[in-house]
Image (cartoon, rainbow, N blue to C red; front, side, top):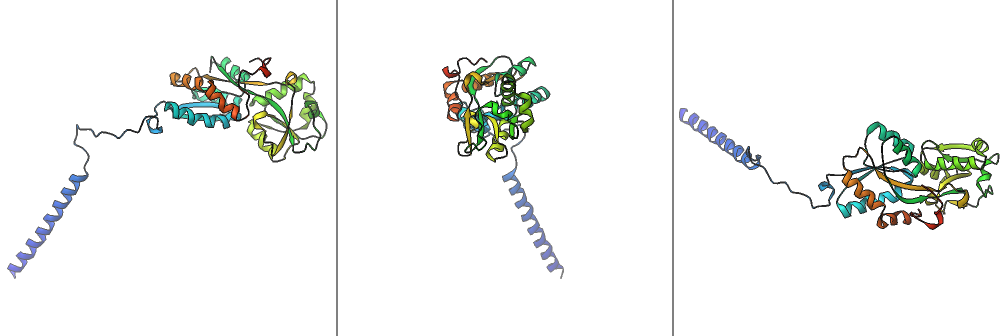
Length: 287
């Protein structure tokens, strides 16, 4: 019996030894490098997002989204620098920039908003890129027979406009209505004021207003009709772009500004219906 018990103990000891040895071998295969050594990381190819260390943050007017969403990838492919956007009404963006001190580049819908940011020390110089041309948007077939801005004062119409504090198109409308001396009459017909031009576009496309002031690039001819405003009566907007005064990536930001203002960059705006700067048609329009 003692002999059998000894054999069992030896067998248990032998199995336990094998298990411990297996654990040690497995640990040796999966352990990290010893202290003082450093593994070589696998670096992504130049130009891929993981390799980009100077990603830009661009504060931009919502009405520029379609063009800028295409410019970003093109710029990244060319220079290997990622671009992120914060879209909104220009007035809202200026408030955010003041509060957060974020954003490397500012591109509002017009030089008016850029000047506001400049007066507050957020930007300095700019380059001019394209024109935002206000037009009258009406429902398909123009059932209310709207032919000019003066018709916006006609009683009973439902008019949609941009917020005068938040949008370039809102400021442009206010300027034109004031020149025509119809501001008070128009205001009686206003059913909504939106913080971005994009929301105005949606309202018109859904048939929720009889007329609105949009920019030419926002017109979808399958959903609404557009009535041009004579250049001499129009408050055409010039779209600028510039680097913020507090950017930590000024070299890269300047490169992005130069790209957007180049012929290659302007082509994206032309593609989406924005006349590019300069244009002889709008030669009398001043920044």
